[in-house]
Amino acid sequence: MKIAEIPVTLSPDGRSRPPHLRTWRDGWRHLRFMLLFSPRWLFLYPGLSLFTVGLLVGAVLETGRKYIGPVSFDIHTLLLAGFACLIGYQLVVFAVFTKVFAMQQGFHPPNPAYTAWFRNIKLETGLVAGGLTLLAGMIGTVVAVLSWGAAGFGALDPSVTMREVIPAAVLLTLGVQTVFASFFLSILGIDNEADQVA
Image (cartoon, rainbow, N blue to C red; front, side):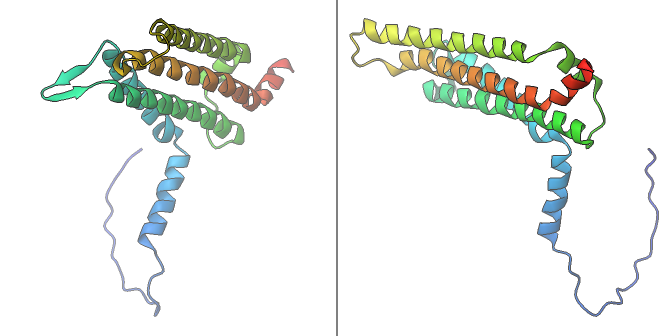
């Protein structure tokens, strides 16, 4: 694609009424149109960034409180890192949903990578992945309950307990998201599977 500058002459508008262009409204409509047709920039890249940052921060804080100069980061930051992982994962899932729907409706051209993905990764694959993630979260929850029981089901040190509870809760939520996302993605891919059977 070649890009060039072409000089133009702007002539006075012959209309008597003022221009009807609304800068903010029309600008937002144009931006919204571009975002809806670009799920990578709307969902995928922000989602991957959030998930990666949340995962890295969570992994570092899981080992204990950390300091950067006079500022300390502890379980409160760990909780926010868990939220970042969940939000990021959900955005990535939305990116996949949007891409598949856009291809089916003809908004986007067919993508061989997505076609191969539907061919090789079935509903059962997502269910197994989600089930294993759920199982890991349940194990973490059991560990937290056992720690509570070892303390006589009394007061616990949050800086220790939350390092067991937060990862377990995040894994449980990711597992549930994966299971139901797999069902929804399978529904979106019914036409694709029907074509393969035919």
